[in-house]
Length: 494
Ligand SMILES: Cc1cc2nc3c(=O)[nH]c(=O)nc-3n(C[C@H](O)[C@H](O)[C@H](O)COP(=O)(O)OP(=O)(O)OC[C@H]3O[C@@H](n4cnc5c(N)ncnc54)[C@H](O)[C@@H]3O)c2cc1C
Ligand code: FES
Image (cartoon, rainbow, N blue to C red; front, side):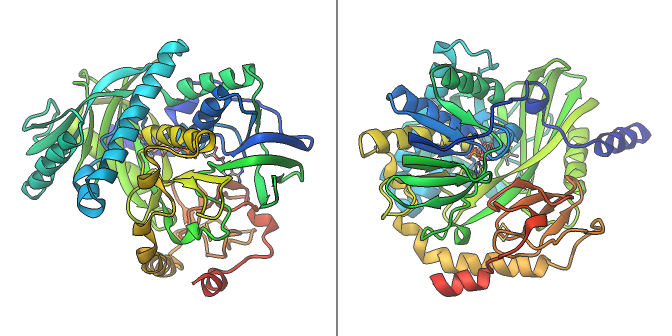
C-alpha cells in the first residue's frame, strides 16, 4: 500500500508530460516575418492542418500553415493515437438519428482514413511504429449488452468487419464486446513530423508562433497574425481545433471542449494486445506502446467539460487506482491530459464554414476520434477545394440540418453549467492577472493538475501568467480588454 501511495504521489508531483512529445524532437519553424500570398492558408498545425496541407500540396496548390505556437503540440501531441473507425457506440446511433446513407458515409470516410495513414506511412517509409491492431468496445454491465450487439449489426451492415465477442484477454471480466478488425495504432508525432518535413522539402511554408488573430473576408481573404503580418489566400482552412472565428457560424454555441486523462504505466506482465474502450462511464481506454522505457500501457479516461471540474488531480488518481487494480505496476513514467471538441450530434464539422462561404473551410469537432476524422477531413477538404464535392460531405457538413434545432438549448445548457461552476475555484493562485476569459468574457477556473486557468464556456486555457495555452481565445489575459460578452453575442445572433 505504501509503495502504491508513494508511486502515486511521486507521479503526481511531476509536471504532466506527454510521451509523444517527450520521445520526439521539438520543432523550430520561423514566425511569419513579411506579408505573403498563397493559394491555400491553413490555420493550425495539428493533425487536421498538416494532413490537409499534405493532400493539397499533392494537387499542386501553394499552401502555407500558420501555427499559433509549435506544430503538433496541441491535442494531437497528447492523444492516445488509436487509428480506428470504431468510435465507441456510434453506427447504430447514426443510423437511428440520420439514416443508413449518412452512417455509411461516416464509416467509409473513417475506414478510408485508416487505409490512407497506412499507405502514406508505408510509401514514405515513415518509422512511426504503425502496427495493425483489433479495436474493441467492451461492457461490464448487462444493460449495455444490447447496445454492443446493435453496434455489431450496424457496423456489419455498413461494411465494417465487426464481430461480437464475450471474452477478452484483459485482467478483468467483460460481459460483451464489439470487435473491429484491420485497425491500427501508431506514434502520431513521428508520422506527422515526417509529413511536415515532406511539406517543407517541397516548398510548403510552415510558420510557427504566428497566431492568426483576424480573418478579413475580402477576395482574396486576408489573415492577420499576432505580429501584424498579412497572408492573402484564395482559400482558407480553419484547423485551429476550437474555431476562434465566429462570424455567422455560431460555433461557440455548438461546440464544447471536453478533457480526458492518460497515465502511461510499466507493468510486470506483458500486455495482451488490442485497443480497448469501455461502453459505459467512467470511460476506460487501453492500448500499449513500445518505448525506450520498455512496453508502456496507456490507460485513459475520466472525461469532463473543460473548466468544470473542481479538482482535476483526482482524475489522474482515479486512473492510477484503476491501473493498480488490474496490472502489477512497476513505474508510471508519464501522465498527461488534453481536450477535444465535442458537437451537438456527436459528429465532426468539416466543410464550408457556412453555406455562404465557398472559400472558407472548417475542420473540427472530432469527439476524441480525430486520428481518422482529421485524416478524413483532409480528404474531404481536398475534394471540396479541387473537385467541388466529396462523397462524404453531407454527414460532415457544418451546416447539416440536424444541428440547428438543438443549438439554442445546447448553449443555454452549457452556460447554466458554466455559471453554476463559477465561484467554485479550488485554491487558485493569487491572481495578478484578470481571470476573465478574453474570448467572450466567461470567468476562468483554476486547473489544479495542469496549473492553468481554464474556461468553462468554450475551453480556452491560459498559463498562470496569462499566456494562451489553447484557444479559441486569441488574446492573452494580461492584454484583456475589449471583451465581448456572451450575452451580447447571443442577443445579436439568436
Ligand atoms: C485524451 C484524448 C485521447 C484521444 N485519443 C484518440 C485516439 O486514440 N484516437 C483518435 O482517433 N483520436 C483521439 N483523440 C482525438 C484526437 O487526438 C484529436 O481529435 C486530434 O488530435 C485533433 O487534431 P486537430 O488538428 O484538430 O487539433 P490540434 O492538434 O489541437 O491542432 C490545432 C492547432 O491549431 C493551433 N491554433 C489554435 N488557434 C490558432 C490560431 N488562432 N492561429 C494559428 N494556429 C492556431 C494550435 O496551437 C494547435 O497546434 C483523443 C483526444 C483526447 C482528448
Ligand atoms: S473560451 Fe469562450 S469565453 Fe472563454
